[in-house]
Amino acid sequence: MKYKNIHWILSISIALVWIVNGLFCKVLNLVPRHEQIVARILGDSYSRPLTVLIGLSEILMAIWILSRISPRMNAISQIIIVATMNILEFILVPDLLYWGKMNSVFAFMFILAIYFNEFYMNKRTVNPS
Image 1 (cartoon, one colour):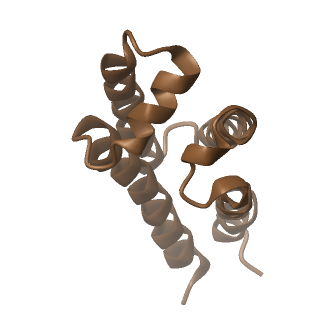
Image 2 (tube, one colour; image 1 turned 45 degrees about the horizontal axis):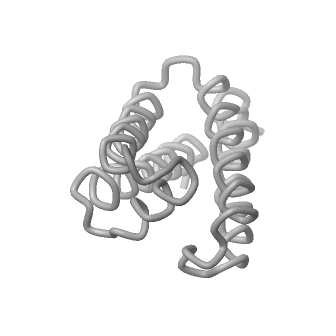
């Protein structure tokens, strides 16, 4: 399979992670644990609207990924957001995470996938050897 195809499949897969987490888990509230995390970190008062805003932001991230506008800035943004979010959750609410503190391992693997896709695979599509 050509590097361009692999890069595109990985981009779609990464975007799907953002869409699933944003739309299904947060906006549609199919995973109430996400709102509980927001409530514990940011407070109960506005946890639902904040969870929806976070979910909408994640959907926008997926659109940004698929648009291919400023892909390196996008990848850096994703890495910073995922790392920050998971460090906060690791410290503040590990009991609410699906895999507990092991959640950070999966977050790190996702960060590696984002990095690999943009800074390795994308370079290979431009300059295949």
